[in-house]
Image (cartoon, rainbow, N blue to C red):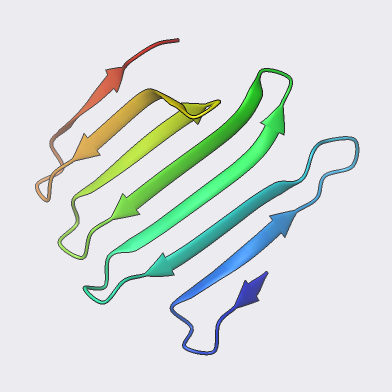
Length: 88
């Protein structure tokens, strides 16, 4: 794991024997919203999971396969939200 000097963002690599490397990056923006993105190569293709939690508690999570969003979830500050299965 590598963290920038401002401690507001960084990157990481996760190595598991006999599996492809998992890479990620994370950070806070100027409004204190947190985001993380994880990528790895699977037998199905390139996988990416990205999530953002806003400072107010709302957020978004997307699951991608080969650049196409397959699942998208959103939540509001009150905990309500939705999950959309775009293609599976």
